[in-house]
Length: 396
Image (tube, rainbow, N blue to C red; front, side, top):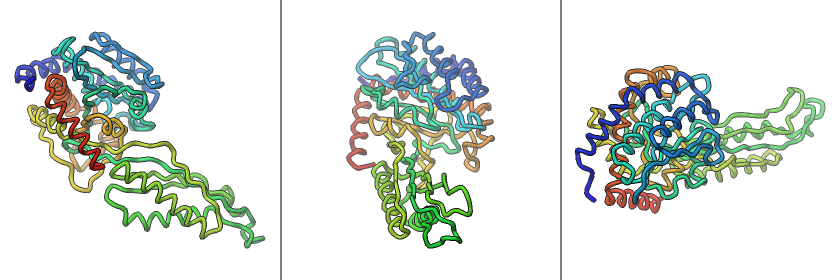
């Protein structure tokens, strides 16, 4: 089929516009009632109810997560998933703007289903909890939610107008050193200081980190450093957050910190245990076939998306685990100036502001139009899959 006509885009934008007030009420309701990761029961119930009322078949408790859901409508040759996040930050509420992500994804799903109808393709509205801690999309991906999906679409509010998000792979590693307790002055030669070994590992990481490639980072905290100053610590433990530009580079960094720890143990007479705490998040693999199309659509609202600045990495997200399996987008649209930051009170306020509403609606319209492109244009979908395979082959 040919690309969707301009008339189809107009109808999708009209459907989003018709729902603008209702979508904003949803966004504000989430904003006023923030819930933390895995606890978003009211948010999930609100969003699932809106979709059920619109004729979607809703399955709740997906992937063993009480606050995850999948709402399905339509049928056809292709399937598009519109992703919604709705967890908040401790003490800061929606300082990452997930209320806007949820409202935009909801609006796009409702508009596409309304315009394309029952046979224009399958629309999945995916309620994905716990992006801030734990990674609901990781569990959803492993449960097969995105099997058979041709594109996974979402946007994120931010302080930049960027067509894609430079999001790194990340995981955590626990390092525990075992030494030997002793009195530090009464029997100084008997003690083997596990805390000193852990501190040496921190120093090693600080020195070596200066030579790590762009996107790689090690940040650690001491979680157990002993309990009394008159006892040489027999055990000390640190927790290290590791990030890297790609999942392959992250695996290498995990191996590196294991090697550093073994070297420290050998030089200090301690023994060490290095434990990776789960797989973490994969890096985000942008599909520019689709993100460029989203950029074209949101430009109709006067928002021009550029490319990320070189060497800038915004963090990590569980959208990475989706993006390495199906064509995906995760553009950033600014609700604050680039001299500000998310995860701040100012950003939380912006997520409930007039600018937040404006961006939410523009994103909903662009998501709806991009979703329609995937569903009705076989050529675009094929190119998106080809680009995903190209980036996978290149290790990007």
